[in-house]
Image: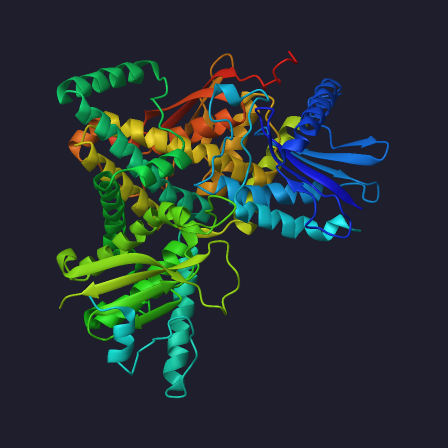
Length: 159
Length: 275
Length: 193
């Protein structure tokens, strides 16, 4: 199996979308925005946050330095972080070195199209102070976003 | 008011002017070349005009809906207190803000205003729609000046009959605003028209939940009202007073042949002009 | 020198994105549409131009918070290290990509935390003339202030944005000022600080 899961975190430390795939044979398998993945989300967030902090401090000159991927035992974590505080995260096997273009595509052609330009959807998923700093629970649930994402990632799951 | 079916039956020779295709007729090939030359010139002229990004335009247009709701909210708030007090407060606050350049108070986010509009009572809701139609009317009223161009082979306003005006709306106005034409135009040749846009541009990204629903359709409906105003505005600029024109927007099913779109419904604009 | 090289590529990014990756509409239509919106607001508020100014600002804010995401997606630019970079990004990239204009950046404050944009051309207000009462009080293009405020806030820059002068009011030029109040700290999960 090539891709195991996909996550989006926002600038309030919240996971606003997650998709886990469980069966290599069935790209429709797995969960979307499930409660069971909350713990994993928090761990994932924490790890990426710590590594990003260190990475930024290890900058050699003025140019920005950021995490692109983290290789761990059985899988690789790919991250794409935007200046607006969104993190697009993909967990994959070792076959492909970089998924940066995939994550960038998701940001520009799926997220911007079906969340940012969707005036019925919030652009900020924390409705108030109490939902910031990792305490939020709202997720991206609109069908255009989900179906576009599925269509885009499904071919990459079993490779 | 006649339904679409009535029109279908009462007029067997249903005119469906094919606005989308430019299929040349055999008739007068020399005239066609002249036509094509003028079209080409028009294209070059259009391309040379100053432009802005369509994204910026579409966001400005769509933001009118939450804006109109926010105005309704503000006016509602003011009416509930004593008018004079409220105005004084706002003016004073405004003057102070001007001096120290702090940002003015902000409205709720757009998606929340859209929800408030959906939940508003009928009177409020209609006032907001009126605002949107007014904005559209002003655009439509002036857009003819923008598009009247002596080289434009589509436009000879002196001799324009109603059908030509409607084709102008379907072709030129729609293309300017939405980068596409109306997909289908139907008429009974007695002042009633249906303009079908199966992929109405401004709403393509909109979706509420995991399932398409009546609530979603109702929340999106206000986004059709600016176009309603535009149609009335164009007709007014060519001599058809708004009192003589009825224009209503509604959803229609998209034809099966059309490739799947992100917004499930198409839009039809029903225009009725009393002569 | 890294600074001029970075400037050049920002300009190139702006121009390339405008030329090749942007669908376009007639600027006149844009002017006309914005004029209709301002007109309607003036009617709604009985020509109380202070209220109109405020509402143009808040409309702009709601546009800006979303527009910035579109901008970041098109350009994949990272956060700016300082206001100088920010000013270049705004004038060479953002204004270019959305409005096909490149305002000049001037009037830097001594701490380099505030600057002005000189708008020589402005598609919002081309050929617009204001009536006398509006000339005194209306900041016609105030939507731009809101857009910039909202957009900058989304990249953790809390700024004040306001018009200093406007040729529509009879001033010699149109000047938009941006002042950084503070850099907003990135949030840390509760329990981790």
